[in-house]
Image 1: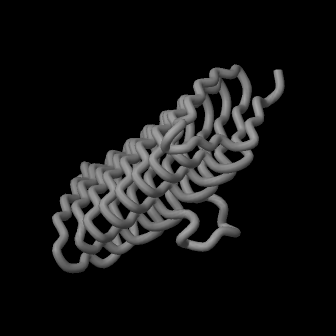
Image 2: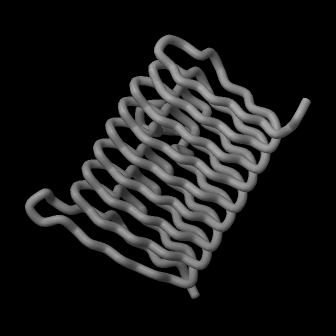
Image 3: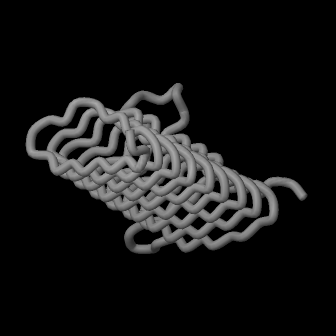
Length: 193
């Protein structure tokens, strides 16, 4: 069977868009999920969002393989990413830092049987939970009133922390950048040395 390809998913405040799809092969959204959408995508293989998730969307992605979100997650979105293997957010390195971050009052929950990688910042009142059997990496800063909870069966690395709450539990090493003003930080490594 071949991949299910969706050009983009857009709604409007006065007319929210509801999309629910299940497919045994890859699901690829070639553009954005934007503007008051409620989206559920279930794939036995991989799910790829080649754009952003933006503007009051409620999105659930469930994958028997990887989940890849190329762009940012922003503006009051509620996003759940459940992958049997890996989750990658903000993976389009040709986009600038602002186009790859999680920002502006979003709630994101990601669970992966492998690793989780977010290539940019978590910013401005977001609530993010990342749980992986493998390593978890947040390459950018966590700042401006965010809450980040990470559970990892391996190592965790994250950028600088500023005016935020972060709680990390890892089976191995934890590496966090500078911790700035008004932070609540808990780091728990069961490595034992």
